[in-house]
Length: 492
Image (cartoon, rainbow, N blue to C red):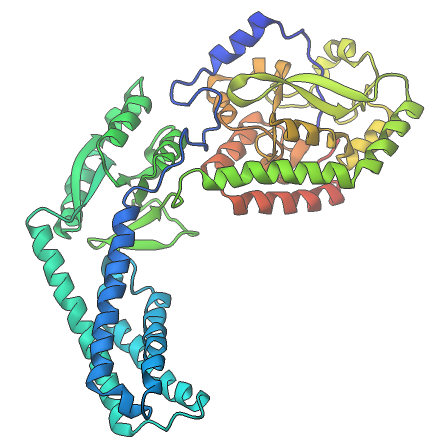
């Protein structure tokens, strides 16, 4: 990873200028785009839990009636069966839950799956009786009638429940309030089939063309959507939404579920499609409590960085001694870099260059190998010391950045923080990467590192990371980073 020396001192006026360039009106002051201001439950989660608990209670009641009708006490020979009955019903309802028959949508009305699941549960009944060796064997009549009653009562119970819910929805109640974002033709083609399902009620909509052309987008649009009291947002042609990263994270942090309605040109190969009114959709649901995943990320950053420093402290000492023996100058290299919301912070590395490297950079600008000139990249940089080449080759010069992670200026995974020189050469659309906490490693580092010489490609990787961020993605990047460092790919 390239170490760039600033060409000017970061004064108070310059810092203000940097913040002004990236003073994004859509973000909370000094907060990561992925972090909500307040933790809150996902919208509609209370109704979802109530629906699931009610459905479990309904199934339990009908199963209890079914078993009583076949006189379970006689089936297992006396009083012991009263203790066994809750166990049997628990097995049946648990299998229904495993099969997803308590989920929202049409899944709970899958009567064929209900039949198969309860039939399988019934087959387990003789095995349970066999396990309890003191319980007499069940007669064929009892086995048959308990199976028929269980399947019949549960299916009838769910049918009656669905009829009642449909009646309420036909009257305009018990519907999920949603917001639609799309073009006029999308509204005509998509909203009607969705509303015909009776499950959803479109509260309002925004024309995508007007939305993309608005100077105040997405702040006013997001505020309007959040204040409308909706639970889900349906978006058509997701690829056509400008600055969709802001839209996604703001809605997610508000606890609002997003449903993407892909057009023919948009194919989602790594997501599961759900059908709403016969229309395929991709569901992007926030956590039950918004911000919990980001809080876990920050906790992992602190604990992971602190543990790493403690366990590898002898390596830090050895590198420090080697730097002192290799060349004159300080052990550590401190540089102002631009972090979250374009705020400067002190960036730490082991020194890998000669002490007067900052004076030499101006003379080497004409050798810059970066295609767009934003980054300063020079494969055979004469400013690098012999030991510095080794440290860079294995990214050992980056180890002091663990202190930046501990102090909260950086994360283990995130977009790489830019030097002042690189930041001043950025274009306006590049600044979107400063909406999240910078990191030691990221998609850029595991996708080529210094071999990627076009900064626009770097920004694309950073945006892809932010848009698709998850704890799993962070862990994957960390593992890939280990492989890249050991293979010495793109490091100079």
